[in-house]
Image (cartoon, rainbow, N blue to C red; front, side):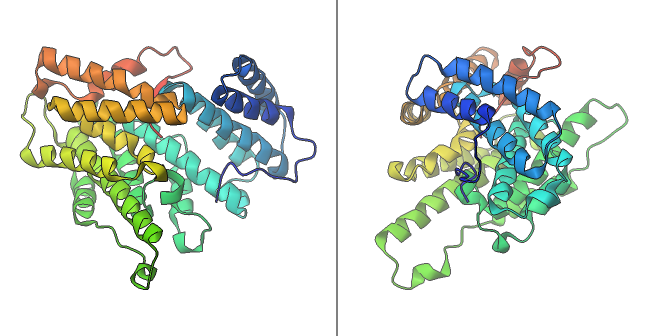
Amino acid sequence: MNPFRYRKTIVPEPMFLVHAVMALAGHHVKSPSTDDHRYTALKLLRESLNASVNVEDGSSVLDAIMILFSFDETQSTLGYWSTHLKGAYGLIEACGGIEAWTTSARADAQIGLLLWWDAITSLLSREDCVFPYAYVEAILSNPDDRKWNFFDLCGCPHSVVTLLMQVVRLSAEKRQSSSMRYVTFDTTMIAQIEQALESWHHISPAALAFGSSEEDIQKDQDCMHCSEAWRHGLLLYIYRVFRWKPGSPIPTHVVRWVRVVVDHVVACRDESMVARQALLPLFFAGCELRDRSIRNKIVQFCSVWNDRTRYQMFGSTIPLLEEVWAEQEAKGFENVWWGHIVDRKHTVSCYPLQMRLCFG
């Protein structure tokens, strides 16, 4: 299921892929040639995208796009994510569409991860995704027949990912309708999703009941904690995007969700690496906090994972949270939400390249 798994069939390896790998590897060993490799990879990749490619050649191009996306994640939460996503979508469409790619388990997992990155980026911006919903439906269908699953890919279980993908589309519609004078957003669908999230619960594998090892039980607990963090993080998102009105106080049940998210994230074992997948729900929770001790716990979490993984998206979350907290202090907690700060970050980009935040 590893979407970054090496393919031995490529002989010789395309140089854009070699330079992409060297860029990402160079970052982790602090090589001075890292930026040169990234620049060369992008240059050669653009040339390849302009040429006609088949699925076999396109697989190497998709590999490089995903590695460069991952490289940019090591630099910051703020990046030109849509450029990578549009390149990947254009490539897949040019090589026969999703039907031609999902015959390979590896490519299937790659598209799943691309859809996840697309959704997470769009969730924050409340804008339309790059990939059409037909791709989401194709990837979400028949989960039992796939050789990979969303939790192993991104730390969020399939059933919650399904709800998240719907929330993303609805948040874009909500934002569009807010700028239209004679359009009123219908909250029926979001109310159903909210209800589904509130009633959702983690189900342990049936095999755990029959003499499982301690490690199996620990893994299941990590899975439960990370899944619960995502579930409550989505509930926080729905409240802010669809329910909250500027100036209104935060309901007590929202405060409880905040604490639940933090508690579940820190309950995951460090060795399992699962907790790092819950950065976005932790960000949503952090933006609702006034308690300094829990704020400090989130900052410490981001700092530790930044050092452990060398993915700067953890480190750049800290000043983003501090900016939210400072503005809440200055203008009143009831008058400021994360959307104000996120939108302001997005406006610094230069057309046609759009900078967006990604916590994927």
